[in-house]
Image (tube, rainbow, N blue to C red; front, side, top):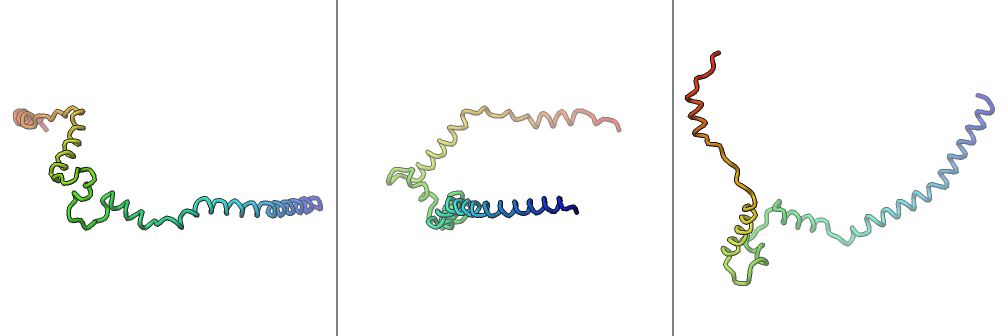
Length: 123
C-alpha cells in the first residue's frame, strides 16, 4: 500500500469514530423519547382485561350467563318482555332486507325434465 492510501484510510477511520461519538448520544436520546411515547401508558392499562372484554363482545370466549337477553337488557324498557325485544331486533334486521331484490332461482324441475328428454350425445 502506498503512503497516501494509508493516510487516507486513517482519516476515514478517524471520521467514522467522530461520527460515532456525535451520533451515539443522539441515538440514545431518540430511543428514550420513543420509549416514553410508546410504552409509558402501558403501566396504567390492563391488557388482559381489555382482551377479555374484546373476546366476550366478539363471542370468542364462553361466558356463563343465565340468559342471553341480559346482555341486551339496556335496549329494552324496564319490565319489558324479552320476546318483544327479540321481535324488535328481528324486524330491524328484516327491514334492511327490503332494499334488496330477491334472486331468481332457476326452475330445477324444468331443467331436469329437459335433460331427460334430450338423448345423450353419441360417443
